[in-house]
Structure formats: structure tokens, C-alpha cells
Image (cartoon, rainbow, N blue to C red; front, side):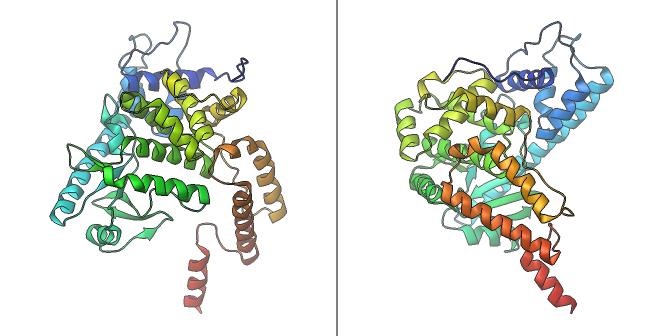
Length: 379
């Protein structure tokens, strides 16, 4: 990569990153004496990504002169307690699901979430929104067992609530809309014969298949909203760091090249080094530009997201806003698992859907099929 450093984070994001880094690596935060921490601002930024528990973990390591006021400390700790309580609830529900699977002759493969929390010094502080599972050949049986078949299908998984926790039961590991995604899905599924059982009784993917899955999960966030959550990148960094004795750099590079994920892997690897402060030099392929890495950093700290034009706007105006942003983010497409033709088709279909909704005055929150069903019921 080139020598010029195009990326300079503002102070508040630099402080937040240092606090999170301190918590996930269990190290003392390094913040200069000249830096004045605006804790209200840090709290706002951390809340956006669910990082408050990590901020509180790091806050406790700071000298008292750098810590927030007593009132702010109490408020932050109460917010962090909600994250810790949610983790305890999820862990309890997961163990209940594992036991129900055992009684019904099923196996539960855990994807990301609680399984990745074990990489961290304080697992309960890792933010987690739901439980992602895969029941091997028992997808339908899992839906029936845990929610009597009452679920919403979300493209690659069924979604339902079990014991107050949102669960995603995967029928495939990743989205399989493109040729490249289908090839990667097949690679991951080929590893199901080598899954590993944890001490709690759930199963996890083999290391290389899991690394590919985590990479695809990170790319899916970039593809859907053009943002990169801190959590995803730290998950990726710590997964490699904790398993580097077992993940051969050569094997890793060979797999990424074979799946045509080498550029994508390289991008996320550089982001992982930048955020964690760890070095993964032995895994690098050095085949992407420094400029792209710096732009990706802005996706993290700048929270650059897709525009959401008002539905009251004329369609042409909405279209211009989306196309303008598409040109701005065009550099990213070479790292995503879609060919130019597939990307064009997807974009075309989405534009037609927007136009269709506009012409028929269908609210954005209502699926088109449901809209016609409601209209037919009201006649």
C-alpha cells in the first residue's frame, strides 16, 4: 500500500476507539493528559453501536481525574448493566435450547453471537442482539420445536421469539443470491462434518470455515447499509488473534484466493489491525490500495450510511439522491460478493420496487404482498 495517510479520525472517535480497544484487549487505555473527554458525546457514540459496556469496562481502568462525574458513572453503569443482564438472559435461553435439542435428538450449531463473546476478557460486555443457530438437517423441526412453526422468513433464516429472545434459525449460513455467494456457502457447508462441540454443548464451525463466515457477515453489513460496526471488526480481529496458532497463514491465503475473497479479506484485515492495534502481518496479501482502506475507516467512524430519501419526494428526486451516493461509494463494490451484472440487476429490481410503491402509494413498512391482501380484505 502507499505511504500517504489519508485518514485522520476526529478526537471523539479516537477516544471511543481507544476505550473499546482497552476493554476488548484488557489493557490500560492510553489517553493523553491534554485530552478532555466529553463523556456525554462518548456515550452518544457508544450507544449508537451498543458499546456502552465496553466503555464502562475501560472507564474503570482510567485514573480518577479522567473518569466522568459520579452521576455520569452511575448512569453509564446502569446502561451497561442492561447489556450484562441481556447477555445472562441469552446465555440462559441458549442453554435451554441446547437441552431441548439434546432431548429431541438434534444438534445446535451456534453462529457468531455468544460463541464469539468467549473471545473477550469479559464475555457479557460484548453486545449481542439475537441468537443465530443452525440445526443441520432439522431446520423445520427447529421452527416447530421452539415456536410451533410460527415464524417470519428473512431470506436465509426463520425469525421467531423464544423465551423473550429473538432467534434466527438459518437454513443457509449466508445469503445465496449470487454465484459467488453460492460457492462460498458450499465451502462453509462442506465443513459441517468437522464441527466442534463446546463445553456448553453447542457446536461451532471449523476455524477456516468460521473465518470465512465471519468475513461474509462483515461484508453483508457493508453491502446492506455501507457501515461497519466496531463489534464486527473486533470479532474478526480477536478470532484470528486467539486462533492464530491453528489458522495457517498459507492455508488462509489459499482459501481466500480460491473463493475470490482475497481483496475482501485484506480490507477487513487492515481494519482489524487499525482498530485492535494487533498485527497480522503473516496473513497479508498486500493487494489493495491504502486509499481504499482509509475510505473504509470512514465507514466505521463516520457512520456513512445509505441515504433514505423522504417517501413524499418525487421519484426522480429520490433516484438522483441514490445515484449520487452510489457514485460516492462505488470504490467499495470490488470488495463485495456481487459481479457488476448481478449488482446492476439487483439495483434495477430495487428501483422498480420503489417506483411501484410510489405509483400505488404503498407504505414502505408494508410488504407489497401484504398490501394487496389488506386491500382485498377491506373490500
